[in-house]
Amino acid sequence: MTKSAQSILVTGGAGFIGSHLVDRLLKEGNRVTVMDNFNGFYAPETKRENVSAHLNNPAYSLMEGDLRNVDDVRKIFSLGPYDVVVHLAAMAGVLPSLQNPSLYMDVNVVGTQRLLDEINKQPKVPYLVFCSSSSVYGERSTEKFSETDQTDRPLSPYAASKIAAEVACFAAYRTTGLQVVCIRPFTVFGPRQRPDLAIHKFCHLIENGDPIELYGDGTSKRDYTFVGDIVAGIVSAVNLRLQGFEVINLGRSNPVTLLEMIHSIEKALGKSAQITKRPMQIGDVPYTYADIDKARRLLGYEPMTSFDEGIAEFVKWFRYKLTLSAK
Ligand code: NAD
Image (cartoon, rainbow, N blue to C red; front, side):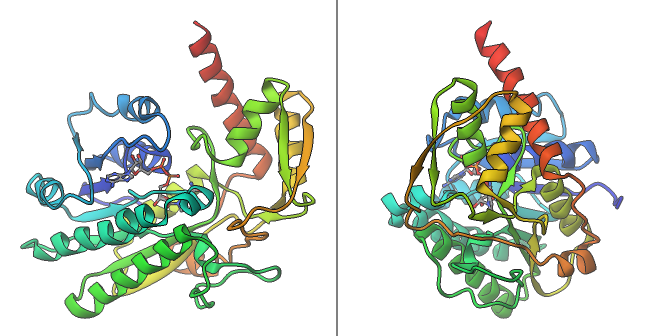
């Protein structure tokens, strides 16, 4: 899907998914501006490493700023104009959101609204790709999750903030005609994955011979999706400029149980896990399964990376980081 070079603002472009997206957008010859506040949700140094390869590219600009700050948001638009805004900046994570719900609402809902306000003030209004989440689907135990399913019964403040931000995007579309695609990624994994996420945490513990905590009986299922596939879906959304307002799942559509996930990590590391069983945690959903027919139809999306291939890629990166930190 080639397109002439565009000027693209990526919020949260120093994070896990954002830095992979920036890799790809720069490779395709676009001009990319990133806004990120390098917050301490996990080590800011990790985010600095994520952007280090971008800094020497003349087509790349980085502004450290906070979405909650009106002046920062204004300033980032003064560095435009932008053809497209990809809004990934957020407080991510289901379980941490239980500790500080208001922070999640401030960043993910009010922050998104600030961005919408500023987008709509631009003389040439850019097109918006907003990153929502599969967590908006709440608790389900069967069937694929489809974009038309009910989404007003979230299980966590994080999920509530994501569906609220989607609704804010819809209101902007209806009142100002802003063109918006809301993508709903399903548990994303791969190199640079956030350290708070299960695959990364488990890898660390199994590598060190420490016990891992298994919540529930190990049969909970997640539709883990490789970051390269998610990025391909976002890039299609950027390039295709869908008209109106659309919500699109991006998943692998092939859920994996928690026990299968652990076995795949064991195989890739060549080590066995010591398992401590714990009850299911509040806020965590037991099952996710993406219906990706709409993504196939509208974006030409097709997940290419199997779970085991993705885990092998993650472990390769994980071990490489270990050798660097040992030096
Ligand atoms: P991440 O934490 O690595 O990236 C988010 C980035 O946003 C970080 O670099 C952070 O510093 C920045 N940020 C946070 N608050 C900010 C603020 N107030 N102002 C400016 N920048 C701010 O997380 P990620 O896993 O890369 O997630 C990216 C997006 O994808 C998020 O919107 C997240 O909700 C969504 N998402 C992630 C997953 C997943 O499995 N990783 C699944 C579904 C949706």
